[in-house]
Structures are given as C-alpha cells and as structure tokens.
Length: 369
Image (cartoon, rainbow, N blue to C red; front, side, top):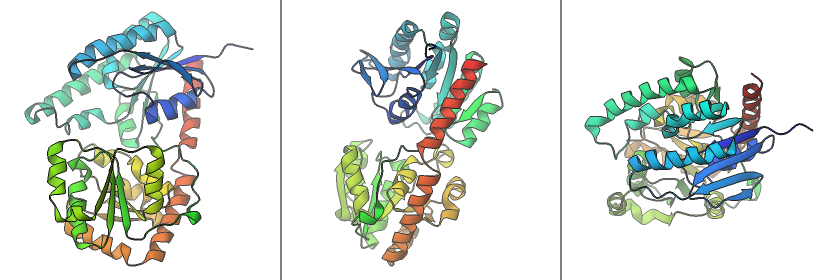
C-alpha cells in the first residue's frame, strides 16, 4: 500500500478549532490524506484524524504577530515536510517562497476574504491610510502568488480577481457543515427573530434594534460586541427592551435559539467586502428552517432570490425594515412555507458536502501535476 500524501494547514491568526480551517478543510482532507494543522496556542493532539500542532504565541500587537507568530508557523511547518501546505492567512504569504524552496511542496493560498477590499473596512486602520495599505497589500499578494501552486477562495468574485494572474484557482465556498434538523418537530414562535454572529455596527444591528421598536417581536442576539461603546449605545434604544441578549454561546445553545425563532436576520451594511461575500449565517438560518430578512444586495438576490424564502430590505433604513418585518409576521403559515423552502435549498445546494469533493479533487490535481 502506497504511503499517504501529507497535507498541512497553517494559520497564524485563527484560533484552535476554527470552523473553516479545522472543522471543514482539515477534517475533510484527513479523509484522503495524512493531515496536520499548525495553530498558535493550540493543545497538540490527534482529533478527528487531524494532527493538531500547537505552539506558544503571545505577540503584543498585530505587527508582532505578523513577524514572530508567522516565523513560528514556518518553523513548525518545516518539521512536518508535507506534500501540500495550505496557507490560511494573508500574512503567511511571506513564508511561501521559503516553504517552496526548502520542501519542494505544493503551496496553496486560501483567501477567506477579498483582503484588499476588507482593508478598506478595518476600523483599527486610520482612514487616511486604508487605501494605500490596500494597494500595497494587493501588489504584494500578486507578487507572492508566483510561489503559489494553487489558490482557493470562497466567492466567484474573489476567484475572478485571482484568475487574472494565476492559472490554478478553485472556488471552495464556505458553506456550513449541516447538522440534521427535522423542522417539522420544531416548536417555533412566530414573532421571535434572531441574529447570531459578531455584533458590529457594520452588521446592521443598530438599524434592527431601531426597527423593532415598531414591531411586536422578540429579537434574540447571540454574539460578542466589538466595543463597549457600541453595546452601551445599542442598549439606550427603546427597542432594546424587546431584545434577549445571550452573549457568546456554545453551538448547542445556538441550535436552541434557531429552533425557537422564525426569521433570521442578515442585514449587513453595503461595505465593499460584505457586498461580495457569501453570508454564512444566511445558510445556517436556512438549514434551520428559518425565513430570511436580508440586505438587498445583487449577490444575495442571485443566491436565493428565486427560492422565495427571503424578503430583501435596505439595511440602512429602519423604517423599511420595520415595515417588511411587520408584513412577514402577519402570516405564520407563509413564514413556515418560506422556512421549508429555505431548508430544502440548504440541503440540496448550500452545504459543505459538495465543496468537500471539490477540495479532494483540487488536492489530487496538484499532487499529480
């Protein structure tokens, strides 16, 4: 029996157990290949047939992480001597050349977001510097790709950008790995709605809390605020009296919330990165049989507009959100039908199984070129 090829996933910025890196990509690659996952501050172990390699990292700043943590990732990666190195952070492009030269392995860059556009939204970068930093990163990314054998990304738009200067690009969407939910056994409350995820102003949370002041609803919020100031501001709105704030919760609690609600909220602001990103929470809501209230973005209409499981709104207009919400809540049977259509679409199209097969084929192609 021939020896299995080795795939090694590398991250310097993500946490242990990251959903895309570990639960989807690493666990899926372990079905076909000997798989390693190098993660800062992880407990080294064998989990789901993945060899997790942790190392200590406590940088004092993002810049120090980009230097010291990335160097540590490289040291650990060279010990593995993999056949494929799968890089999951833009800052790891810096070590692509050295990995290539010292191991002869195939190198994959996984662009989880459109980084040049995402930089334009980074609150921690002073606004006057964002455009120039975005341009500098884009130039460096393109130069680094000459040491990359394959590029993976999550949307057609990002893949199209990479395809302009790289011949081997594969879209592997970040669709959820679904758990089995029998929605006919779920006891929903028609006027309970939810948002689950990071609680940032750009996620449209403020407009939702404003909107529900004129609706007979209960809004479940599960996630962490990005700042204390935003949290205090939100709690000063009259609509906050209709909010159940769960904070950061485990997956089991998220499932309980989704089973109780009838509508999932995806009213992200029209920032450059959100306009072109697949909203993973949308697909998770759909799998749980929820109707969707979504930002009216062309990409979202293209994805689910024909499914008749969603109402689209201007995410910056609380009055419109309130009006559409009230209309949706009038007919519980219609909400149920929307949820059933959403669930069917999630099971047939928006799930990890199809993406996993694309990953296996992409690895096979690289290893046999």
